Image (cartoon, rainbow, N blue to C red; front, top):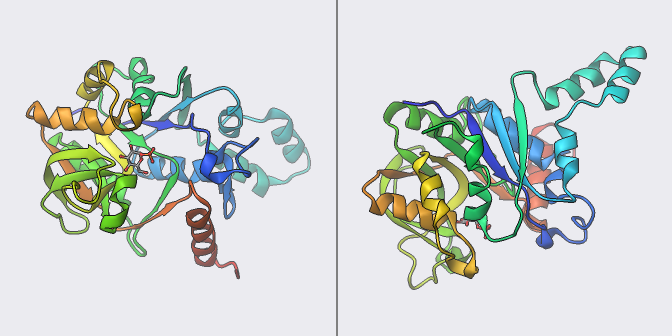
Length: 284
Ligand code: G1P
């Protein structure tokens, strides 16, 4: 079974829900406690054994690429002053074994289209992860394994696609992809029968929402190549995953153990800041 080594992170969105913060700063660069949101997400990928990040980006968001690039003048300045601790902080952003590549999304035509923009950067038949960076996923307190790490392990063991889910109130299902499956216990996976993007509360097959962490087989790229627009007239990753199942492939819903913060809107971002700050020992 091919290992999951790459994660595609779509970062081409406008971040309108975070305006005015996100007018001139990419929303992925907004800080959560002591580092930008995107750095938390890349650290999550690294902890799951993923060492190549493919950013799907657009004009005006180069601060994200700069964040993971070397900064020679700053490094030289810190080194010449003997500021070793700060230098280490700088080098930890992009450790030597991490590769960050980027590709541009030419048109804002949906998540499925964004993911497909990275198709040529995968090897033949290579599986991959998708991480939506608005959502910060925090591991269960005291657990040494992350939820994404568990999903990658499950893929390695059986080659079955994994979609991270959590329960949401039925009134909120139309904000998410909603899976059709018997409810797995937390930390477990269950076979899915289908998945639907942003259903109405009456039509939703369950209250288990897609969080924004996926481990997918290469086949999904072929499905995305001719995926017609779906909900919101956008090419939906959810629809291609549903087709993957209709073709007879096993796709599992992995019910997370940890906690999510939707940093794409102010309230979730504030909660992430206060929760993570307290855990890090700050008085807030
Ligand atoms: C995307 C996905 C959706 C998922 C959600 C999680 O929707 O299409 O299936 O539940 O992210 O945040 P978006 O929030 O981009 O509309």
